[in-house]
Image (tube, rainbow, N blue to C red; front, side):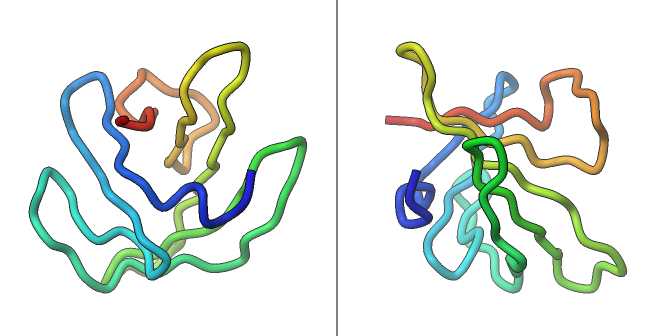
Length: 94
């Protein structure tokens, strides 16, 4: 997976959508955002990892871009937690 391939639109099971370009998250649920910053990108175990910081935040949130596997869709896991209830899993919208 190349970094440029992740700059797409993604949605979760609740209909929340996020959209990326090379500068970061540019839309959430269709509304423009600004100021979300990404840093420290690196590859680990076939996934692209990075850190994100929201405007005014005091800490960073890990973000993992996961390539499609066995016919599935590319996905994103964006959370400080090691477990998920599905709210922080986003799948690429074609």
